[in-house]
Image (cartoon, rainbow, N blue to C red; front, side, top):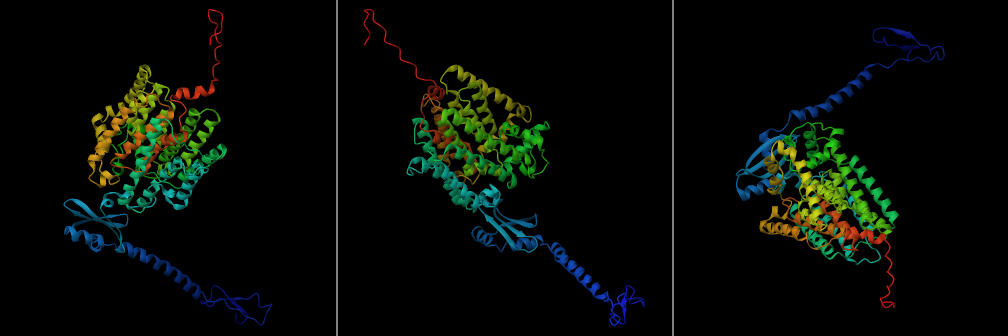
Length: 575
């Protein structure tokens, strides 16, 4: 302020305005600050914005050339070591999502893969061996299981599994060891997440072999040390329901659909539009048509509610299908517990089975990956529940077989289950009806030969590092195990001659585990194929009778009264 005048917006052009405050303070004069500082401040912030964008624009403009990317990749120690042992390798480079993928070949075979940041020129990843062709072998976080892999989720779930099922009154029981071995897959899983599949793959087989030995022990002998959890039934059931809610919530909030779920949705879309399923998948899932027709039909209702967008996006249909498969297996285990053991004992068994499914980390792993493996589990449990109804038994087992083929070795045992020709005939009728219905679509288009080549032949000839057979030259041993699977599939049809539901579950688990030992490609998702059947065998042992249809009726019916002694012809009572 100066001379009793307030500077106005016209300052600089000789325009002055009277100061209304001059009457209150005549001795004080004010003057408006010059707008030049304000302009300078505004210019400063504009300059910051411009300068802030310059690095981004420059970064985009200064992307590495192909030659520069190859030169940067050539300095990686893995490339240097490979060329030291194999000679000069031929590099190729392609730009993908902000980085250069530089691949080094020897005689047409890719030996090293190096990822170079397209702007900084820094090598971000480099892979040799199995990790070159198999992204799932690189230990990328979130590829499978998502949040379930976090130690603060996985470890508490393992502890809760033991807390609920271990017999804490007798810790040295074999059944408690069974529970620890079931969690033993976690050791292999740890190394898999660290991209050390040379260690993770061999560690799977001791666990499978132990479980293979335990299953026939319960199945053939019909008795064994069963699980004896100490929790009250109500506590176990409440805990099981809570865990199921937690799993479903985790799947909705933080999970992704792997290629298996993606393939299911694409196949359902093909069926919905009247197109052939096989040899008709998009490039990003070109081998997704490797499953049976039933698998894609199972996804059809969900794909109609949440149609496929045409891309590999969140795939809500795959999420919904996986949740239903998981809940179906959980429900069927409860029904089987009530079927095997009537009354309060059956309620305890049902609660044990429900908790065993809900708390086991690898059933949650299948759900978090949104795969189709729990569909196999649900169909096999449904087959077991309908074991005394031969037509339905054959139909449901055929449904399982034409979903993922792994149920095929169980057919002879379920065929002869009731040991009479009429039930066996009804089983065959049910199996054939579903088989014809399932194969009709691919038979019409593109033909059964293409169907076979894309499914069974493709899986049988699969080359994968996720098995001993893919990492070693032990193929003769694999062939021998495959032959043993066929022999036992026939033998279990007659031995034991009469089977309880518990024995049927145990022997089914044994065949599925033995089949998994022969697979060229094995993964943790496959555990749910046999786990619920093995859980029944462990939880419900010892079997009370040799016949499941008698197992319930003999408990419900009171014993028949003894007939009174009949008088002899001489009139005296018989001795």
